[in-house]
Image (cartoon, rainbow, N blue to C red; front, side, top):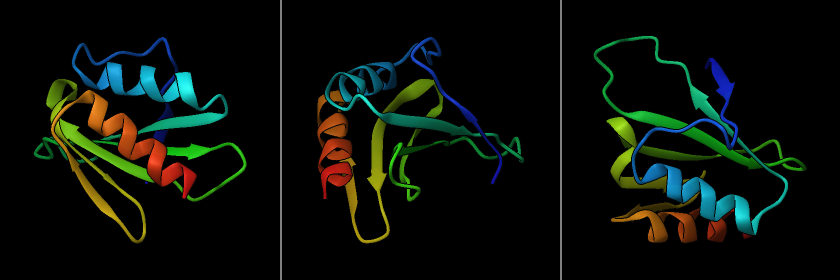
Length: 97
């Protein structure tokens, strides 16, 4: 899967920006990457989120423009989040597991 690093300077213009702002405020060594779409028919945005010390990422999927619903998942869990606060909490919960 091709990805690119998603820094604090990158924005979607949607609620996803708040998710990443909240996560970065709680987790200093977080790495966020965005999947580079291979197919224009794919209308979901997929982000990989991990700690610098852990190569296994979480996945966060959202609608175009960084809009909810947000789906946060790892190998064992799947959390549906309706808004930015729920999504940020889900990311933090799975990163802390």
